[in-house]
Length: 150
Image (cartoon, rainbow, N blue to C red; front, side, top):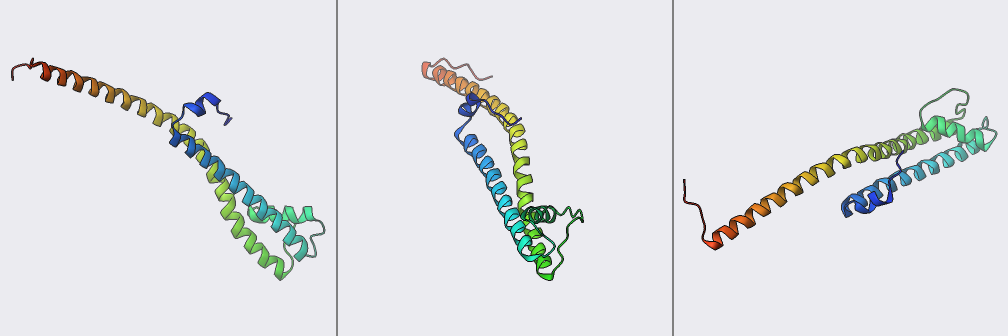
């Protein structure tokens, strides 16, 4: 869905290419941070909560806590794991929001980029026309063939 032809990437302006790369890197960074938080959260729940018997249970609890889904199949049962859940929720909300924002930025940037390119082409066409008219006026003045004032 987000595949871009190589010719399109190289025909983009340097500013547009760097913006697209930064947006994609932002998505990769936020995904990496969210995975790190989920793995640390899963390990933390596995260590802190006696009802979490496996690491996969801890990862599931970390995901449902960070995403604020709270299915209720697993809940923190000790004071330490509940306090840890608060940290996981706060970090999870922040980082998962970044992931969502990065994906939205890719979609919006693609749509806005095409519109901006069309406006840029139109402006460049108008600038060329003004330059041609200015050159013609300069040539006319230099040759002394000016039209009498009306």
